[in-house]
Figure 1 (cartoon, one colour):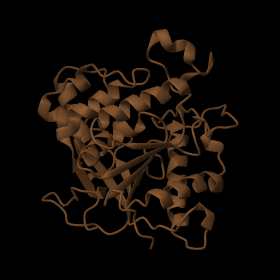
Figure 2 (tube, one colour; figure 1 turned 45 degrees about the horizontal axis):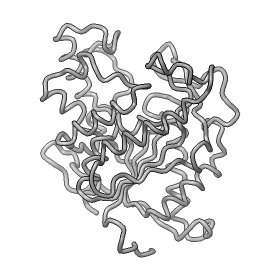
Figure 3 (cartoon, rainbow, N blue to C red; figure 1 turned 90 degrees about the horizontal axis):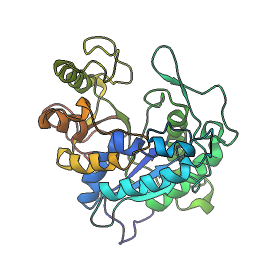
Figure 4 (tube, helix red, strand yellow; figure 1 turned 120 degrees about the vertical axis):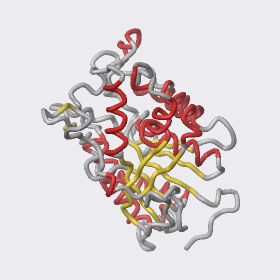
Length: 311
């Protein structure tokens, strides 16, 4: 195995996300914590989120069906978000898969059962249409350069069905395999095997707890239609979780990074105004399923508290 250059952090995390803001919502607190601790954090974003819904009226002209310049704007948003997550030290190493603009946001629509599916019309250059080998090779190059011990991406359903999330999962998992093969495309760098792979997850228990708090506060519109005691889409049963990273000390950075995405996220309302205790648990405790590797030491709840546990 190739040795690690002396100027690289000893522990290195690679995250593969579909669009700007996905990384902050799902894994931002973990990223902030690890960056503050001096661990290497590299984020790969697969598209610029060109098809996103714009929440700021004065920027609606950037929409895909008008000027189609939202991607450039979100490029600035993600740079601002990364600065909020890691304001000190070397910061977060951010890359675009294949370079900015290589793959376009595929868009989506909602299925009647509450999960995302591909849109009726998908752009020719959409990530959903990407050649898997080509896209994987872009990531193989990054893996062999960064040499992460830990990779984080989505599950096989992209957590909620978005085609770009599903494709990000496919590309990440395939590239991780290819990067470890000594004879595979040597021009892409020296082989590297990632020791542990995780899929980001939303704890069913935490989601129900949050919904109960929201409903108890009299809010019936946030997550409208979701019953804290009924079926919940997009959650993972707690028994399937492997790790819970407690980064509640970095909630302020995560929320600041979310505010850096005004076109996509409105950080107000009862869901963001939960009591400090519940709010910190919602935004600062991030959960993961293990997809490759051996679990390290676990905490009292039976979950790892560090994605590098055992390495």
